[in-house]
Length: 214
Image (tube, rainbow, N blue to C red; front, side):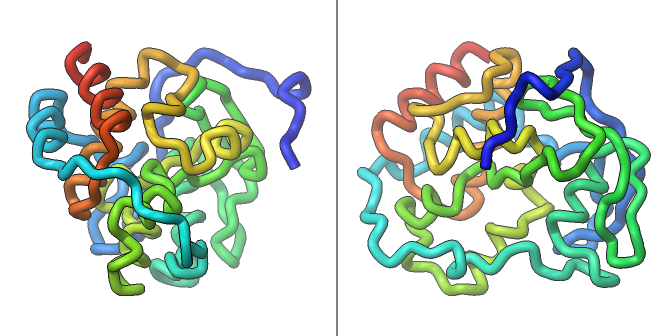
């Protein structure tokens, strides 16, 4: 159920710093934000390489076909790794669950101190991925996307915004923080390019407009 924004306090803030976490899918050191996407020029090149194609059908889609929040190491699942990475002074209990800390949602600059107010957003939503080629992938490849700490696919954000976004692509939804649109477009393009996904015409046009203005 969506929470009421009135009870929340939003504060303007810069990027959230974080304690270093070494838990990651490919054993690399995580950082205090998603891995930095390529610059705008490279992203434009990647976008041109992405095959333009109408979205496929939703038929057969299930989140269960993208196994996620898998154990990364020492019983810490992907969600907890991202919360640790994207927060400041994050304290975890014996089961690795975040009990306290501070998080700044890059999508809206809202500041939270309760992990329950955050969702881990799949930048390219799993349903969008399914319609962009993932329906033909192996389960192992879909699991990789759903838990990818190497690329800019996962980010801790205000839960209401993640729910509002749903499976919309950038032609239909962008973060309310306009100054983050360039970063968001670069993140989206990087992930789609890395996984060989397609993009529909409206999606490509929206991404090109953003990247041309970066």
